[in-house]
Length: 95
Image (cartoon, rainbow, N blue to C red; front, side, top):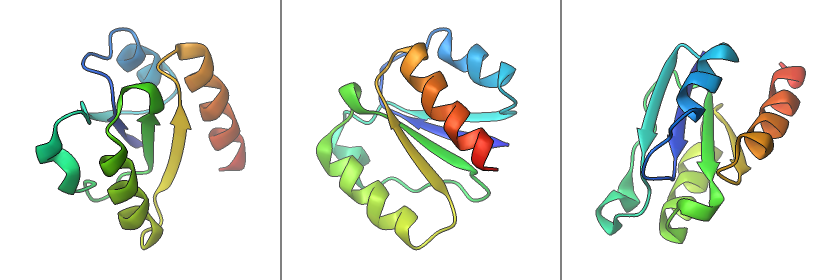
């Protein structure tokens, strides 16, 4: 599975924890720069994880609009592994 993480300057242990959850391809965008408001979700992305406390609001709006027309799932969580893990478990149980 592949994931696009939007938000946070550095992911730290989040990247390794995502790998342990089964995500083989992990892409990351900081989501703070105004120039990134027209970001493109890579093809074959199974999940977009938005770290809500580290993202520009315009990027969130652009992501929602782009994903609405796609089959990609989007999750919103704080930049805390506990919050991310809870959202991921709900997502993985749906699959």
